[in-house]
Image (cartoon, rainbow, N blue to C red; front, side, top):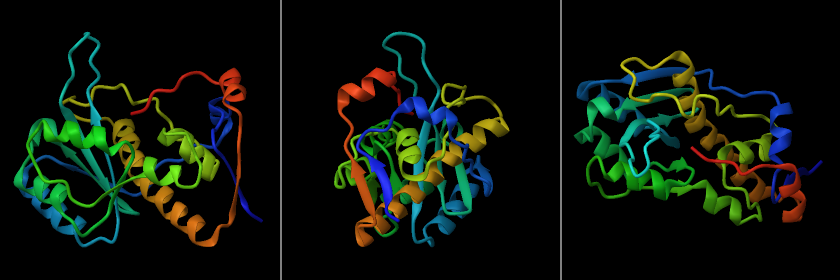
Length: 219
C-alpha cells in the first residue's frame, strides 16, 4: 500500500496525532574539551541531524545570537551550548566537515546565524526544504512535514523558552534533541520514497488549506 502524502498538510489535524519525542541519550556540551570529544565521535557517524535554538527577543529590531547547536545521530544527541562555548575550534571543525552529511531544515538561516558567532566554511549540509520540493510537497515547517510523512506530532511548546538559561530543563533538552533527530528520519524516508516511488501525492488547493489552518511559525 502506497504512502499518502499531501502537498500541503492541514495544521488543524496535527493536535490529534500521537506525539513523538527523542528517547535516546542527550549530552550537554559545556567545555572545549567536551566539544572535541563530541565532534570526534560525531564525525565517525554516517549521517547527522542538525538544528539550532536562539533565545527569543521580544524587542523590535533586537536579534539574539544562537544559544544552542544540537547535533543528533539515531540514538544520541549532543547539545552544544554556544552561548557559553562560542565558536570553538571543535565546533568549527564539525561545521566545516565535508564528509558526513548533516541534515536540517531552513539551513540557510541557521548557518547564517551560526556564522555570526564565528566565520567558517560551510561543509556538507542537506536542507530538507529542498528535498521535499523535489517530490511536490510545499510545506516548509518541520512539524507539518513530520505529520505529513509519519502521522506523528512534534511539540513546539518549548520553542520560545529561554535557551540562555543557566541550566536547560529536561523539556528543553528533549525538544532540542527531537528537532535534530527527526531531520534524520525525514531524510531517510525521503530517500526511500524516491527510490521505491512507493507514495501518492494528493494535491490540496491552497484555498482549502487556508480555511482550516492558521499561519505557522518555524523554529
